[in-house]
Length: 366
Image (cartoon, rainbow, N blue to C red):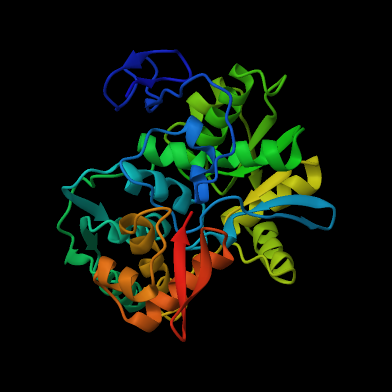
């Protein structure tokens, strides 16, 4: 892999931070036009992503375009854990090659990584504080994650990991495909990883000649701008806009009436879009308060889907029982539910064969 600074052009064979301008070094994409593959999730854009060791997807990506009060919204709440982090987790889990991952608990990011890494059997340890929400501990326990208290100083993966950025950038490709001509985009800014990724995605589209000009990006924040790369983003042409906390809260309520459940920081992008005509990127309120029993939320259903995608050979007709034996986990009923969910998403097909006097159902992964 080759890594580059999208601000000054510095190149390196290793990831890290640009020694010239301090921006995270990002994966250098192959300069070819993207094509829409039949692979699942973010791997729809596999031609502009790093080559995976195995394809991991839980159905993340290609999220809906919503319209609320004449505001166009790219709603990320339909991802498996309810946030755009699942895009990055899918890419990272597809390229990680063994070893132990150590994380400090960072709410949405940690939940997403724990879910995706569990599907490929990566040993994961999460350091939590003493005031951690017990419901979060339950989720980590369900995913077979090791938990310790204040035991990790430096996590293995942070928000600016280049593979996470590669997953996040697929939002830009989807906006191009879904809306074609986008003039202005409002992006919620905390640390700035999402904004950096969206910029990278549109820079690649421009380099490939698929768009004439970069859309204008507005980084939206509440209170004080806390992004460690705020100055570099300004040099990349990003403008920033502050939203009042009370306006963000009002937007949370307004969006909820339209079944869009957002954190205040994400709702602030909607506030800005109403005043600027921008497309608002709105991430969801995390799906961590849902029941973690089999078949719901972050529970067994999605884990079984991930195991099926990771372990079952493509194109080979297999019964649910054979698939259950292959993945070696869960109940047969749970595997049936996971397979039927994959069929509904277009990630598998089902056929019926008559053997003797019995009808036997066979599943084929796409």
